[in-house]
Amino acid sequence: MASHGHKVAMEDSVLILKSWHKALVLILIISSIVYYYVFEFKPLKLKYPFPKKASRLAIRLSQSDAIREPGIMFVQTSNDLAPSPLAMCSIESAARQNRNKTVYYLMSGFNANISAYREPEYKAISLLSSFENVIILPLNPQELFNNTPLAGWYEKVDPNLEQYWFHVLSDGCRIALLWKYGGIYLDTDIISIKPLEFQNFICAQSSNYANGAALGFNRAHSFIRRCLKDYIANYNGAAWGQQGPDLMTRVLKKWCETDNLDNFLNRQCKGILYLSSNWFYPVPYTDWERYFEPDTWEGNSKEIEHEFSKTRGVHVWNFLSGGQNNHVKGSRSLMEYFFSEYCPTTYNFLPD
Image 1 (cartoon, rainbow, N blue to C red):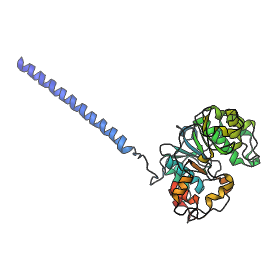
Image 2 (tube, rainbow, N blue to C red; image 1 turned 90 degrees about the vertical axis):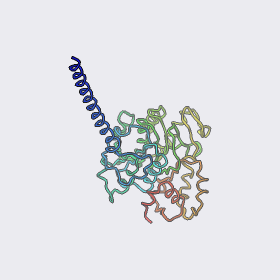
Image 3 (cartoon, rainbow, N blue to C red; image 1 turned 180 degrees about the horizontal axis):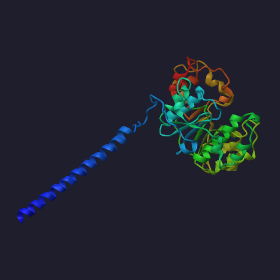
Image 4 (cartoon, rainbow, N blue to C red; image 1 turned 90 degrees about the horizontal axis):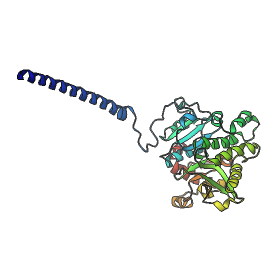
C-alpha cells in the first residue's frame, strides 16, 4: 500500500510539474508578444525628433475626429497646397517652441491623405509633416461651422461677392475652432520665438485696440460664444477687419465693461488676460518694412534678443508684406535672423 501511495504521489508531482511548465511557457509567449508590440511593432517616439528623416505616410481623419486635444491651430482658407515660406516658418517655429503641444495645420485644399503629397511637387507639405508634433488636416468649413451660429451664414454667403473672402472665412474659422476644441490660434504670419501657455488671452495691437491673430481660449468659452454671435449680428464683408480685430475689440470692451481697454493691459479681465502689444505685435503694421530692411543683422543677435525679450511671437503683417518681393536669405535682415534661428529647416528650404 505504501508503494502504491508513493506511486500516486509521484504521478501527482509529474502532473504539477507539467502544469507549471505549461504555465511558464504561456507566460513566456505572452511576454514575447507584449515585448514585440511595445518595443518592436510600435515605433518608439523620441521626445524631440525634429524633424524626422521621412515624412509620415498616414491617412488623416476629418478635423472633428483628429483634433482630440487642445493644441496650436493654424488655418489656410485658400485651396493653395504650396504654403508660403512664411507660413511654413510659422508652423515650424510653433512646433519647435512648443514641443509638448500638438500643432494643427488645417488646409482647405488638403484631402486628408498625406501619402498623396510627395516631393518635389509638395515639398512644403512633406517638410511640415516631418515634424513629430505637426498634424495636417483638411479644413471643412461646413463641418466646422455645424452647430454654431456661423452655419446659416456659411450656407447663404456667396464667396464670389466677398471682397475679403479668405480673410473673413479665416476670422470665422478661428473662433469656431476655439469654440469647439479650445487651445491656441495663430495666424500663419506669426513666427513663434518663445513657448506659449494654454490660457485665455487676447493681445492688444495698439492703444485701445485688440487683434485676433493670436488667441487662446478654453473650449466653449462664453467670450467666444459672444464672438460667434457678434460675427453674424455685425457682419460686413466689405469692411476690412470688421470680423477680425474690430470684432475682438467690440466684444472685449463689452466683456470688460469699459471704453478703454488700456486699463487692462497685462491684467485679467473677467478671466481673460489682455496682453500688451509687445507679446505678438512688437513692430506696428505701419513699420512692417523694418522686418525686411537689409544689413540690420550683423552679428548683433544679443541686441535683437534683447529688443524682443518680451515677445512670444512676431507678427509680420503679411497682408501688407506678402505682395512685396522681399528677399530673405542673404539679406541680413531681421526676417533672416528669425528664419535662421526659429525655423532653420524652412530657412534651408529658401532660395539663395
